[in-house]
Image 1 (cartoon, rainbow, N blue to C red):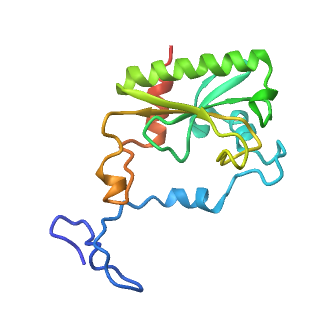
Image 2 (cartoon, rainbow, N blue to C red; image 1 turned 180 degrees about the vertical axis):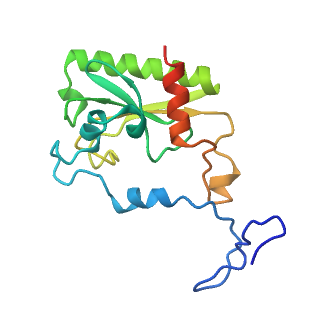
Length: 184
């Protein structure tokens, strides 16, 4: 059934079960994440997406900035718009295993990412951190990556709580171009 404004009416869904009254914002790209596609099975560099990304071009890989030992890339499955990750080029799993040079550049790229995202999108805060190991919640535990997640007052609003929906107002390619252009 179609509403007068051409949006599907989720109260009249096809399939099994009764209507639930929830609106739908379809995000089929997330199925790759749910299925665990492109995650390294054995931790080898050949399987690792964080090793493959910098071997390609910046636009298709969503690379925002490259350094000497690390790079900044948009998260394919972002928590918020502008969610970046800073990764060393070297295939290393644990923060205690990075060199002093890698540690310094991961820190510098993280700081620069925060400045850039703040300048472009007026982020009011950030969540910054690394999930280490399975127990620490690492989605890809074989290759270290630091999350830089911009936050705004009220960004945890009714959509995920009541509407069971997250919204991202910009395509990842557009976000990458905006941040790459603004990066000092």
